[in-house]
Image 1 (cartoon, rainbow, N blue to C red):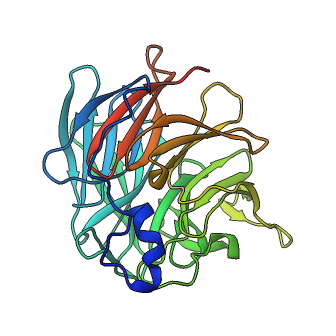
Image 2 (spheres, rainbow, N blue to C red; image 1 turned 30 degrees about the vertical axis):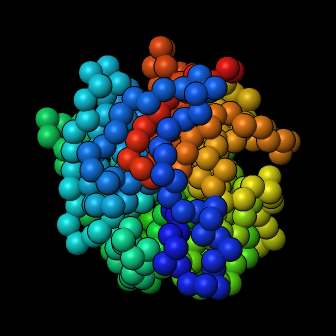
Length: 318
């Protein structure tokens, strides 16, 4: 998520890094190419790859989920959501079934409405898409990242409240799992955005903090029998890398344990190895989200979404 010049003077030091770049292209020296552009002044906040290889694009400028097919090079709207201005997080919870976060964020005024954030499920297994609201969370501040614990339970990142929630997609029941200073945004005027990107794997939650800086991991236990997630009393997020203005990220498909992180202020996707070393993997102006292909032909292809509504692809050497 980026700030524009209308952010208050107290946060002005953030504006140059976060303002939407005029260009949405990838540097020509990178082995990457433009593959799709949404119509109009679109903003893609997040993307995931379907089992059939199509890309699902969550839009921040309007409450719409779009699909792009790399085979046909066609893009179409999949679902429109009610009672919201935008989409933020999206994750696959079971084959071709997704949890999607909606709420009121204005890309014109760069303002967020607390209490407007809800979780939906989108089922694409049938002949027609089926969207169902799971729960509107009245105490939500600014829901962004979302990650599955299993097919019925998810973690949700609240960027305004420095909090991880758990929600059951069947009942809508939710609770706080962890609140920590590493998830907070720094004191400033304007938009408050701390914890952002979120993934969960093998008992560990990984997250970025956009304005506060850093890429972290923290142990989160999940009991599949009770469906409850919990952080140990002494659990404290550990910083993997001191990244600035990091947003969404993805685990490398090669089993190396590396992560690829979108850093829009640097106009780059950064590779982070398990020991915290970083290197530039691709250059993408205003990149917001990344995902690797799931097919035999594109498993090493990194798809990159941008706040300019463009999608790019780059082949990553594994």
